[in-house]
Amino acid sequence: MTVNDIRALIKDVPDFPKPGIIFKDITPLLASPVGFRATIDELAAQVADAGADAILAIESRGFIFGAALAQRMSLPLQLVRKRGKLPRETFSVRYELEYGFDHLELHADAIAPGGRYLIVDDLIATGGTAAAVAELVRQQQGSVAACAFVIELEFLNGRRRLEGHTVVSLIKY
Image (tube, rainbow, N blue to C red; front, side, top):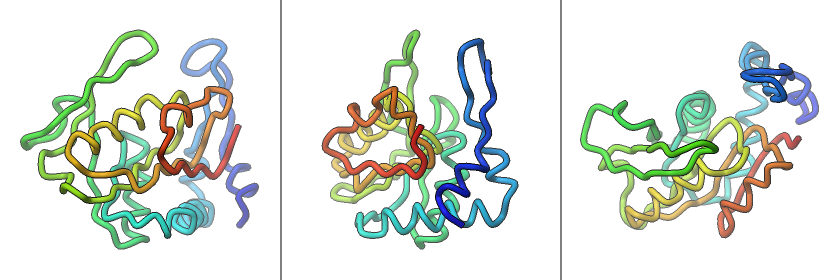
């Protein structure tokens, strides 16, 4: 299965969640065992040389791809969540949204000083969420091995927020 075959499994949903937005629906991709496997295989191939020690998967759709990628690459998985969702001691970062601010958290023991972390999410738009995770890694004296996304909305220029980091995306719109 090629990247174009994977792209064909992602469906456009106009005016969701509000008028003027074209939502990229990954559920048909997830419903295709062959397509999902090909997606994980391709992501794994593109980040194989990054030298990651663990994967940081961003809530919530990033958990799907991060978990499968961690299994495929035999790497530990850490979950990046919104504030108040993790059960043990955490560290957090505040980041800017289009209309306000939010917080992301990791368990306090998720980042080892000197460790290299692969940040994974389903989609990169403006890059703010992934940049916030990269800041969490930096604050804890780790480094970003790479950032991996299934989809990139190039017109929003999210890579700009991740300058200095390797960014991999399979499908660009």
